[in-house]
View (cartoon, one colour):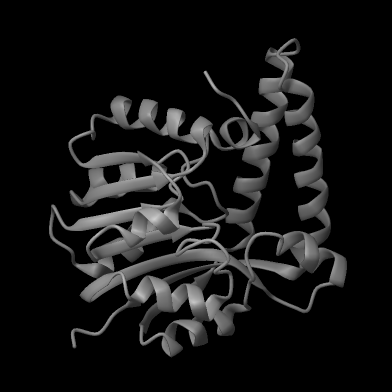
Amino acid sequence: MSVNFQRVAYATLPVCNPVDIADVEAAAARTGLAPGARSLDLGCAHAGVAIRLAQRFGLAFDAVDADGAMTELARERIDQAGVADRVTLHHAWSGPFLADQPPYELIVAFGTIEPVGAGVREPAAIMSGLARRLTPGGWLMWGDLAWKSEPPAPLRQVIESNNIYADHAGWQAAARDAGLEVVSAQLSDDAAWAYFLDGMESAVRDWTAANPDRPETAAIAARGDQVKSLFAFGRDYLDFGLYLLRRPET
């Protein structure tokens, strides 16, 4: 079994981000997509969202992630949930995978690094790239960090080491500039953040206590301390937005 911080920290969470799975399901319900609708989860992590939406709505997912440890966990969860006929797992980078596929009726992307290709990190460019990969009338469920106030420069540098983030209004503006309709937009509440952060911390603590002699343990524990410190300081400046967006029919 491959193991890293992400596999340990996210193993018990329904979603690998600070968002309530019930809100994800409610957004999916608003699409009205029929069972079998061709769907994509970019940066699927342990595939929890794809699994839940396949179970709840019968959607047919490609689930894509580049992290080998997470795709191993995703495979286990897909098999355990009995949805291998509806969730097809791909160990791949999001951008190249997406470029080779026909458009989707639904794209889900939560906290996904460079979802449309290497070096594409600006909100407007990301939204534009994803909009082009939707069928007419197709849906994008986007979830990501959103600045709620201007952060100290060092915090911005750390948080934006992979992607560039907007504030809540900025994500919506980027979507509209890409020709997408903003159907719904909401920010996670404190309870969703607490569930996410406490879940990660307890999972790392329990795993490291149970596996003191594994070669990965020290690095996983250290990364857990870094993440805890980062959000203890950064939470005052950070929200998490969930956006349901639609490409027009024409």
